[in-house]
Amino acid sequence: IYYDPKLKLSEADPLGRDLYISLGCMLENLSIAADYFGIFKDLKYVLTNNFVAEVYFQDSQPNKDLSYLVDTIPKRVNARGFFESKPLPDKVQAEMMALKKDSRIRADIITDEERIEKLASLTAQGLRLAYKRPTFRKEMFHWMFNSLSKTKRGLPGYSLRIPFIVSFIIPTLVRFFDISPLLAKLNYKSMTSVPFVCILSSEESGPSVWLEIGRLAERYMLQLNSEGIKTSIFVASIEMGDLYKKVQELIDSNLTPQFLFCAGYMENTQPHSP
Image 1: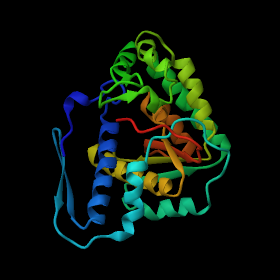
Image 2: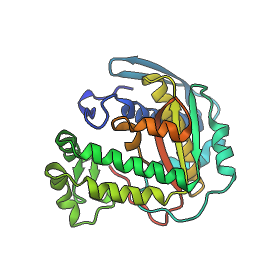
Image 3: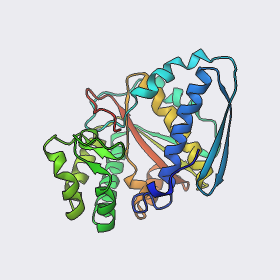
């Protein structure tokens, strides 16, 4: 597994953290599917330049217990919009904690409205910090497309739940104008509607632990999605400036928050991005 250096986001992801977390998500999907079909042997991290990992295959016994996850992989989408005011079942937290294996990673589950509101406020602040920078907006402009675009990369308007007509002008607006007040407000409203937030933290920061965080995050999200619970990723509060320190205060930890997603019930979600 290699990553393409031309696809790195120097403004949105200067450390490469989200790059490795997303590759970890992909590796988890790949290993689940290979294990289910009885061809998985091993997975090794290489981490030399842009050479990330090697995955080995062999004939083995299919693991049919994973069928519910394999069915969920092509259905998972980063849900955008507002969640229903409905709590998650009590068993969900216990199920997730049973999946955590890497001792370097701490998982915090937040369900009380006060702390979720504070996280939503920090997320809004992070978006305002990001979109005030012309260099950040220019980078985003190159990855946003109208809903009729045939490109196989980036984010078409429909995957952002942007109205069809507006999708033709939003990339240009993002490029030349600071629309962060609107984006911050929308994300704040979306995040304050969620009943459940998961924050993954670690003392160590680097590609190895980021890959493991990606694998765990994907497994968590697949588990939730398999039970009809939607998931939505919000990382502005841990990516922008020193806001992560306030997240540390909220979870009473000196570990570095590396990834954050929300979960809940949502009636409708958008189609996949390409």
